[in-house]
Image (cartoon, helix red, strand yellow):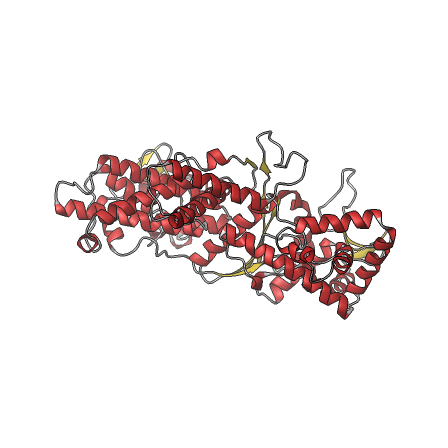
Length: 574
C-alpha cells in the first residue's frame, strides 16, 4: 500500500519545481495530521526568507500548481501559510480496493541492519531488566524485516571474564553430569550464588578459580570444554525465556564477548599505531575529543588495563569493527540501557576516528529506560534482588487465565491455555513497547491486562471481535467486494488503515516502536466508532454489508500485521 505522505511529497515536489524552479524540487513539506483536515503541509513558511515573500503568497502559488485531482478536495490555506489537505472518499476507497493494506512500499528496503539486543549473562538468570532490551530489540528486528531490510541479530551475551574461573571450578566440584550442574538450565542463579559464596569464603577455592581464569584465557583445551558446557546449559535457559516471550532470537544469533577475544590485542595495537591510544597511569587509554570530566579534564576510555587485561570498551570497539567489516552493516542499533549512553558515545567516536565506522554507516544507541515498581524505584524483590523475568511472565499468563475463566466465554482446557499465553505475554510486551523506549514505566499487571485503554488485550479483543463478525458472514460473498465509503466513520476508518505504511516508516527511521502502538490503538478506536455507527451484518443493503465486511477484514489484516511486527499474536477468540 502506498505511503500517503510520500504521495503528497511527490506532488508537492512537482508543484515547487513548477512554481519556483528546478532547485526547489526536493523541498519536501512537513506533512502532519491536523484538526482542520486530514493533513497539513508546512512548506511555505520555511521558504519565505529564501524567496523574500510572504508565506501566504508562497502557499497560494504552490496550490495553483499543485495537482491533486482525484486525490484531495481543493486545498485550503490557513494561518500564516499552512496548506490543509483532505482526501476524497473515492480516492481512499480506490486505494484500499487496489490490494492488501499490509503490503507496503518502503524507500529504505534493502539495507543491512545489525541489531544488538537482549544480552543476558551466562550462568545468571534473566531479570526484569532484560525484558525491555529483548522486547524492544525484537520489535525493531521484525519491523526492519517487514519493510524489506536484512536484519543481522547479535545477542551479545556475557560469556567471558573472571567469573568463569569460579564457575568452572564449582562445576568440577559438583560434577559435570550432576543434577546441580544440569539445574543451571532451569535455575542459573542458584549455581552462580553457590560458586560466589565458595569463592568469598574458601581461599583454596578462590586460588583455583583465579588459576582457572588464566587457563581459560590461555586457551587450555580442558578448561575451554568446561566453559562450553556452562554456555550450553545457559543456552537452554535462554531459549526457554525466548520461547516464553515469543521472540525471534536463536542460537545462531549468539555473539558473546568471547568471539572477540582474538581481536582485542589487534584493536589496541591499531589504535596505538593511529596515534589514538596512549599509556596513562599504566593503562592504555583513548581520550576521544569532546569528552571531559567534572573538572574539564580529558575523559579516558581504558582499552587495556594496567595488568594487561581487557574490558568492555575493548570488546565493544572490536564489535563495531566486526559489524562493519564482516557483517557489512549499513546501520547498527544497540538496544542497551540508558546508563550506557556515555560509554557508547565514546566507543562510537573512537571507532569513527579509527576509520572503523565510516560516515555512511549509521550507528545508534537505542536507549532503554528502567522498569519500575509501584514505589517509583527500579523493580526488585523485597530482599532487594532483581525480579526474575520468568516469574513475571508466568504470573502474567496465570492472571490472564483467571480473567478468561471469569468471562462468559467457554474454552476447552487446551484453548484456554493457548489464549492465556497469547494474552498474558502480549500484555507484558505491549505495555513495554507502548512507552518511549528511553523512558521508565511502572510494571502493573492489572493495567497491562485491562480490556480497555491502550493495552494489548484491548487490541486483541478488537481483532477477535472482527473475526467473530467475519465468521457469521459468508466469506465468499465479501472478500472481493468493492469498498464504498458513504459514512464519515467509514471514511475515517479507511484513513486510519492507510496510515500503516507511514507509521512503519517512522518506526524504522526513529527506532520508535511506541509510535506503532499508538497507531494500532487509534486504529482499534476508529473501528469501534465505525462499528457503533455503521451496522455491518444488518446493513441496509447487500452491497453496503459486503463493503463494510471487507473494510472490517482489512482492519483485521492491519491489526494482525502491526501486532505481529511487535511480536504479539491475536487469538481466534477471547
